[in-house]
Image 1: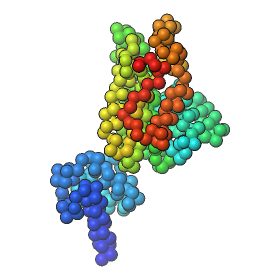
Image 2: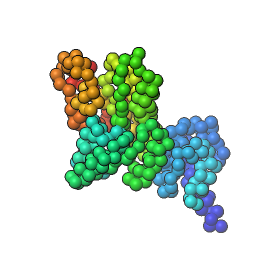
Image 3: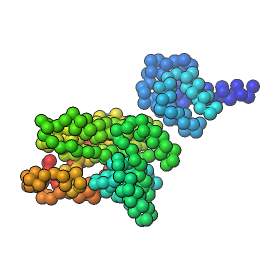
Image 4: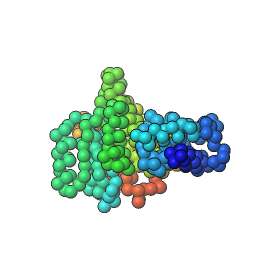
Length: 85
Length: 248
């Protein structure tokens, strides 16, 4: 299914972005791992993830949504929602 | 032109030091977005005067105490102008009187405008600066915030607060290539200092080694120095006194 493949690619790309910013390996990032509690991110790192996503996908993440950048699953949801809009 | 393609926000841009900074930044090629509290006519005059010289400045009537309105405006200008590079927090008021005569309103108004206004604008733009890993914040404090001046406990407290705020923020955001600096003007010839009592001015004058009040252009040129990253890129968290030597 092409649509599923696209979603899968998005997931991979996101994982790569988060890994790069968190300076950790992609394998370490479980889908539901909490960025702060499990991966040692701080709020600035979450913001960097937001900025990287905005740049890559030409979308805009509002300030209110930045606290939601706390796990791969949630970032994916956020990206999916933004891309639909 | 030193600031070609830069977008600068200046709060309190229609009078005194603020106006001089708006004009100086525009002359260096920046697109200047200035805010003002009351005077639509004056804001329009500044816009058209600069436009006639081929310069870019636009005024916006915004109360620096209104956090929500500022955030809404920020969203609008980020879309319209594609981003902001320089934020100059300049808007300020004074309500000078001896503490024993100072009302709670006198205190609140000065703190709300000078210190909370600084928070409101900086908070509004900081995420934008953090995301692009670039930003330049210049805060206009006063020598009153450094040494304290009589009949100004509200003003001195607000201006001292601006200095501490700036130092704390400079450390916080330096890893993101955002600079935060403070200018402390001394006695500058403006509407604000023209209200000072003659006797007080006579007392202060011998304390100024350069023997005169400063001009708004002299402060504006210091702001230009900080705004121009080619000359001040390694400077952050600093308090620059433009005071004729008053506080050395």
